[in-house]
Image 1: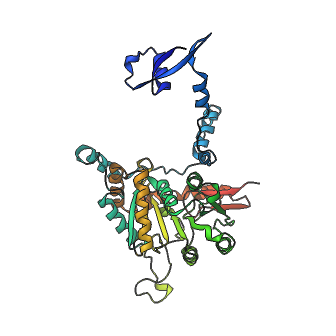
Image 2: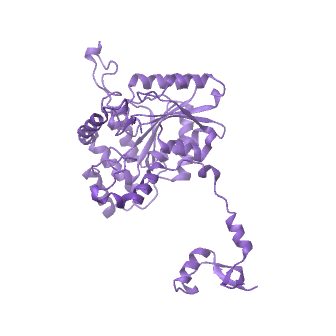
Length: 409
């Protein structure tokens, strides 16, 4: 049996050699691979080939949902040629705003690229102090969140993965409500397995069923539920949950000692003001008639509530990948959650990219009014879609985010 020297990256090397390269072009360390001769030339030994065929991949990953956005892109690419004369195919599988990031954000990035000597370096795992300080101020003024610590993440998806890995053990369960945001389900399936996923119902009005949740918490196996997930405004329901409902959900999870993850990615898209306007009395107001709006989008500061936010939608920074998590620092349990989550942060991302945080900081400084002006331009399109769907018996959404669901005949 002959032997031949191949580099460790055998497949890459074999490709290079077939393209006319010589062994001298590859500087990787080598090992000896036994070869067998056949009528068609020299091939690897069958024992090595059969071993490679047995290489495993994770059963959890294989049984995890396929991301619908990628699936839709594949379908479109397969059939795009049939629609070229009709304007092409438009994907509705992913919420992407039409506007560009604030000019100030792009200018800040350009200026940093030209003069910031730290742009290429690591920053603290939790993000730069400048961005975190600005976010703490924003959360207090716009969301009513006080006494919180921040972890800046590579988008809201990483923020949710951080939460799942920090809060759930193998036998624990996490609740999501159908129709759900697919990446939430994927994070649970991939990291904790299908048995950790508990899917609850949503009413025809797009509101998750808290009576069902209470029954699950009080029933057999209820002690295994450690986390409940709510998305507000809803993706993909397109429904803004009212503050009274959110307060009920917060109280229910507090009663049973369960973490509540609130994904507020679409906080700027609360079209009807369901979660920010005319709720409660503020300051010296003595009646509801004197009530004023204090927070554009209220969030709970309770120790068991973890709030997730994103720059991808409102500020059109999707490609910059910036999200953040707000965790209470008021109690020992919430402080422990924050400290343990930093382990996850360090393992997945180490830290968010400095250049992305510069864009995010400039966007925060531009303010909510800039976003509101852009979001307002969506009113006409949303109303047209709702009008077009009006003949159908069941329509969900239109009050929040950028989604509408309808039941076809």
